[in-house]
Image (cartoon, rainbow, N blue to C red; front, side, top):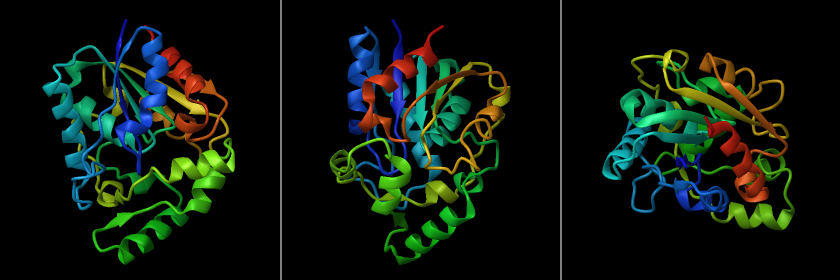
Amino acid sequence: MSTYVLVHGAWHTGELMEDVATAIRAAGHTVHCPTVAGNRPEDPRTLGLEAAIASVVDYLEAENLDDVILMGHSYGGMVITGTADRVPARIRRLVYVNAFVPNDGEALNDMVPPHYVDLFDHLAEESPDNAVMLPFPIWREAFINDASLEVAQAAYDRLNPHPYATFTDPIRLSRDPAQMEMGKSYVNCTEDTALPHGHPWHPRLSEKLGLFRLVQVPGSHEMFFSAPERLAEAIMLAGRD
């Protein structure tokens, strides 16, 4: 059996991964769901990408976790890439779930359409602590389009403001993901329109992994809420040897 560490995306906490974690645990695996620095209730929303990466590195070291299947969702792809660069010996495989794949010097905002950058720049300017919140209409139509309105609203109500510096900070890597030696997988949720299909997650971002395993699954960007058991199966397919 394997050890999975699930790294959430922007606006989320580790707790919001628990429905997927429960399904993976039911298959006999060990699953950890840490909350990344910047999204914990006690954290200032001014924290940047390096603090986020360091928090997951610290978690792996504090829990003495090795041979880990490290999954990142969306923004979590930035975090797991940095973590893999810092402590490669602790990681067996990286699993990206419609996640950003950065090369050295890239920021998340370098990989999104200009209208998102304009939106979040504006929201950050209006924020007292450089935090941004995803507007509900975008959440409903683009992020969780496969759920009922009730599920979409209930999930949205559990989100929290996200530190915008983690979107604008360039990542610092000693090697790009394609040069990393551990296994890599990409889970592509095929109805995900959080990024428009003209500016897609796969293959535009996934091909930056070099050699990787592709797992495709029907569903939106937020299957953690809308179809957790189906997403858990896809993550396990992506994570197996």
